[in-house]
Image (cartoon, one colour):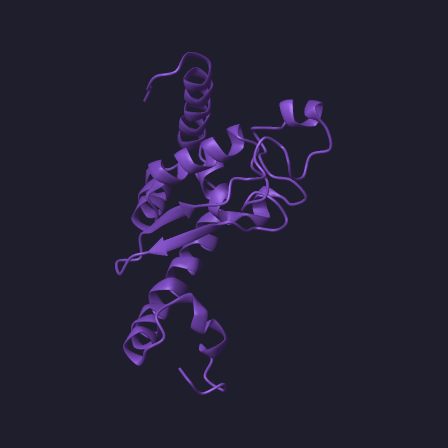
Length: 173
């Protein structure tokens, strides 16, 4: 919008600057807010190891894709990302049905170049609590996955796959 009082005016540079695009964005906001509410509810779930929990999470997220993203990000110790206090260098795509995919970018601070003070700290980065200067509970996108035993096991398997690929090459699961 061209009117500076419009609530979307500050975001003009994020998408095509035309009224039709803004109408699409406005139409999508209820879906985005519903997705955020569901994610936060799941992140605060008392028993995340139920079939209902998994079904609810799989209805709002491409679980396998996001598990692979966090495993690769953790393997690379890329902390200039969602996994730090900065919570940056990723994007979420939420489709019209409210299902989310993650879009990574900006890996130039991988291998501990951000957030860890030494090679030893990078090598010993805690893969079971893969955040820095924040907590898992403050990162619901990651927390909803790692608080579920099955999803945590898959995440750990993908971390193992990263090690295999890096050491021997090739493709795994």
